[in-house]
Image (tube, rainbow, N blue to C red; front, side):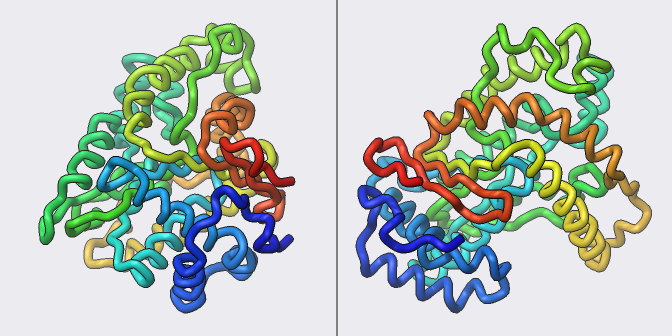
Length: 331
């Protein structure tokens, strides 16, 4: 499904010259992107890029943080990569992508959480399994990075299920113009206490029958994560259709993770002796159940709080756009 330009919310329209500049940059910089995604570049993603660029000029923060929330496999990384490339080409901006996935606690740290708090915390993903203090520090450091100064950002390998040695970390050189903070739980809200009473799936029923794990996770979301997410200046939501789509897209993502890990092993430091913790189909089903409660809560609650919601259909295409401004809602 392709959008027509008139379906982009009129109240979010930007300077036509800026929009055309970004569209043109995308035509040259994004040729290797998936064809289906590129089909919506002129009428969805380029106007989004123009709107965000305009918002940057209106925000009081010199280096704004744009939060990008979306269920697993929703295309957060693709969007961030495209925005960074296009902004550099068209506007000369140094755009840093900060992925919450790279800020997972190490495997040993999560194993310790599992011993001290609850066995389910050995599995990465839910609030409480990220290094929140480091994430907040990195944002502050990126905002203050002077010209020529360098900052290292961790890299997490999902196949090893662990943080990589610092030889593999992202190197950022200042100054920074924009931060894109992306992740499946970015901007998520805590679940109401009464909604925590009953298990939502087999994992919770068998491994968290007393609700200790889900309540602890919810406390993290209401506490340190709320403080972390308060650093966000604008929040976008890539709204997945349902958990069935998340399962399918996460399966595809697992194969992509294997390819990325294999590519890393070709670098100057061999990773061949490390543990392969990739997921079988049964493991994937169990893994996704860790996310189900908060994903479904986000689908219900987050659209009212996000500045812009892009609804995705089962084919990964944007099917509707909504914003906080009532008159711009478009079916």
